[in-house]
Length: 357
Image (cartoon, rainbow, N blue to C red; front, side, top):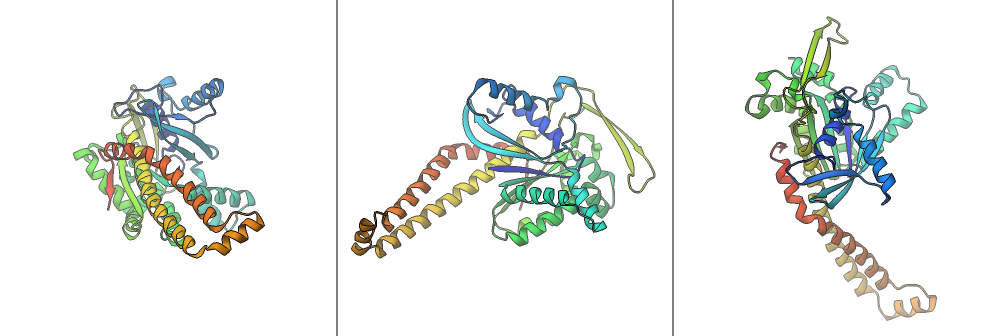
């Protein structure tokens, strides 16, 4: 399965990767029993190198924020539960600046071949994804009192445009998404009451179009959650108003305490749990459909078909149909091995993720 992050530059996508490493990296500890590790061929040297590459996201090594993503990267991961593999997924981290550049290029009616190629890559990643993380800076959402301005500054408006089109092109496709409100530790105390209830309400208001799309599409599953890469009290933010309409404020964040990420694992567990649940439902439907098709073939495939296939030395219709059904059944058996883990993943996720209904 595939998970893609969508958000403008500076929204916190790469910092979220850091929080995943600190929370679910295979060297870390968490009470849920789940952890993730880069998926590699079974060679010790390559496995160590891939884990080392993932560890560059660690905030606890140098207490410095990671550099922003400069190019699209696909991270293949394995999810483990109590040291046993549960499922596999590809994590797609693309450079956030492309969302702004797309808008600028369209406004100027000037789009290079390189830009068109990058847009095509982004669209392909979204098309192939089982789950999408919609990333927005929580501080930006609360800094602007005007909802339309908050929608514009946070990148929600550009995200809406993409997924309105997605809904129109794929009206019946399953999609799991999470509105991830990053840097939640930096918002004022009035937004943190009742487990961030006011912040979640503001997020739903800013992303109202995604909420509407979710309600219109019965095959979509949505959630919203506040996230922090370092946790409460472990970062200090300095904000300076500029008086410039293009860039109304400047901010600088410094890590001042040992990182204790907030809700990082819940985001991933929601994506994986909902996706596995949808895959299980679809697998049941597929098996039933294949069984019906096989029954129809058997009714139509008589003695003449078998004699002709024998003469031509080719498999008859019945053999082909049975082979297809056997293949689908094997896929379902693999999925069934993961089935016991679906509910634990979702139960853990819904401790913090608020479902959008």
